[in-house]
Length: 396
Ligand SMILES: [Zn+2]
Image (cartoon, rainbow, N blue to C red; front, side, top):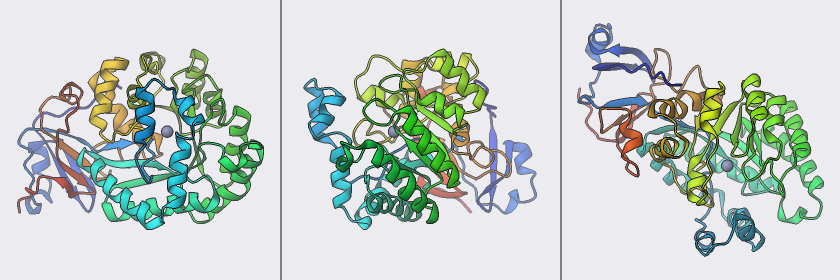
């Protein structure tokens, strides 16, 4: 994870949305297509693959400012939830919103991801918690992403929380998700993955096993929110089912780390959530990396626990709070994020044949991305070879 393959005085040649050549400038300029290509001069600035943000909840109706204030007054996440805030306030707002309104709001959000250098995101449902509202979220995501240019890999997160109507009969809600929602999502090809929140008071490890079995038989991939607030056993279930990713992992122990490594499951860490929740502890990134577990970084962008879409801020937190090197953080935010979405062979690095997704940053040294914290240094962003954000300085 510490090897960037950095090229000084490099160049890229894009053709039909893909990288045609990459490497030292002199060799790229010798490519037969180079002479007829439009030129963007990055002026010696840092160019990276577009960020692949592999954990977000970007479809919602309104920010959760009341929760934010309550927390500043000292209330815990659990207390806020009990008082009707938390996930359930987002659920009420999403249920009341139209698909068009959700799509329009997401399209605005998608621009912000692109402007900060993120070219692909994973995006979860999970604020509907009934069949129609979950489908509405996923359809809004598809429409909003199509309009914006941002690539979004959809994940069905009906198991984000027990729906309020099922508060006293959680197993019936799990049955509803397994027997009705997952098949409906698969039928309409609205998501590539199924996710679940494995945590005390949400979904037990046994319930997540049932959800994973239903997702697998519907042909959908697996990811899980695991070991975030306590040790709930989600990491072991992820390893058992060879899930694509286990996310958060604040309370993962050494046996969890070894099980995930052996299963080839990626550990997706979201330090922005720890930061925004004002926590002192962060996930054990160094222990994971030292033990050979592949780590991805993501924003966890959502209205309750991490209203941040800027991956550059996540790189900074990974460095200062989890002692990841800037190189490790960049790998985690690009190729490892792509691998966590099953896109490792097509996204996440600038190699011939891969998607021409790249961002130019107003600095020269990759360490600066984690150093100038709080800034957006992206000055030009390319998706599939098209300039989609930043400077309009493409010369013919
Ligand atoms: Zn999440």
